[in-house]
Image 1 (cartoon, rainbow, N blue to C red):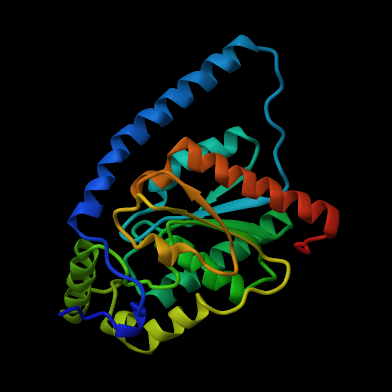
Image 2 (cartoon, rainbow, N blue to C red):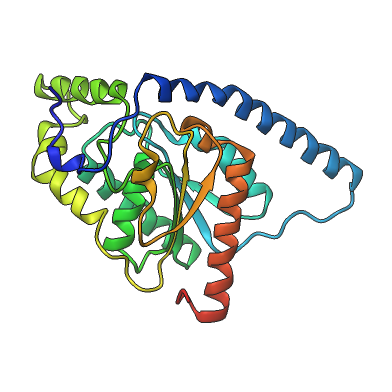
Length: 273
């Protein structure tokens, strides 16, 4: 029996099974698609050797990795955003496997640092669990966050994920119980900490914070229905859960969301219409 609190899997949502998980094999094709796009972009730049590089946008972007992943997992997406002129920053998360409240607190400090350095609010792009962290921080610190983009983040049902992730969580809890520091404690998945994080990720967003939620019906890791926050502009893509981190078609959606946020900030002073 799972050690996850029942409220993390509300009625109406379910964990993807074996058949759904097999769809993650499409990550190979998505990797190939990234290589093809990179090759095409390289050829385009070579054909215009004297063209000026993309101008750097004033709005900084912080990328937050998913469960058990680190900043390197979003390296290819970061590279694409930089090619389009955005200033990207890592979250400084080496492995996203600690207490949600603790990781959120460290991420909040990171946003403060980037916002102070750039003199502006930050857009946060989060993959899976990273998106849920971004959603909570947007509620807590709208003074730092101008917008968020979530990629396959099951905010409506955090436990609506494949059994392999449940087993990984339970292993981390056991290791934490055995005295290994920096890992998920039982309170983080079944106690007050879990409840606080869940409530924050479901709270209404402050006015002025743009929100785009990207989801895929081909997601083999989480229930795609849990990724469609009713307060977000939902955008469907055709990608695996893992592939959302680098599929160029998903990157196009992220770029469109960033440009939309930048336009609103320039015209309305940060108030989203």
